[in-house]
Amino acid sequence: VQAELQQMQQENAAQLASAEGDVAAKAEAERAVAAAAEMAVEKAVEKAVAAEEELQAVQAQLQRVQRRRSVEEEKVQAQLQQLQQENSVEVAEAVQSTEAAAAEVAA
Image (cartoon, rainbow, N blue to C red; front, top):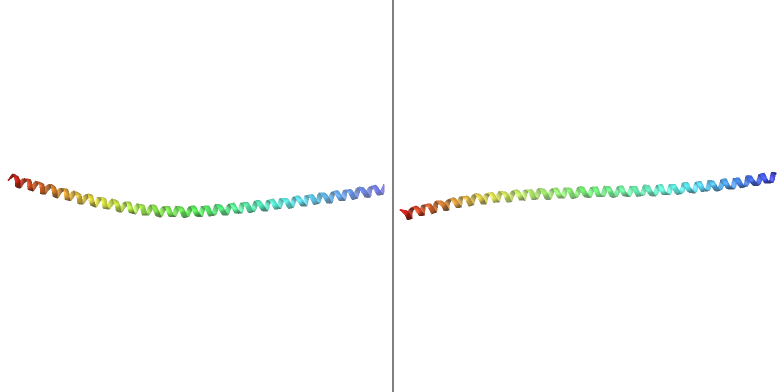
């Protein structure tokens, strides 16, 4: 009976050691998975931050381009108004000149 009891104790100890090894291996695997997940999250965050920085840079460049375009449009508009005014003056002068010539011819 004593021998059977010792054998059962040895088997139980072996099973316990095996179970402890399994638990330790499982815990180590879980730690490895958690570490890999943490690294993946860190990389995703880094990519998101880089993308946000790139987006901000592109938006700033777009604003600069839009401001330049607005300034250019204002310049073109001013030039157009100037030309229209000059054209109006030239047309008025031409009308006066034509009317004066017509008056001379009529007289």
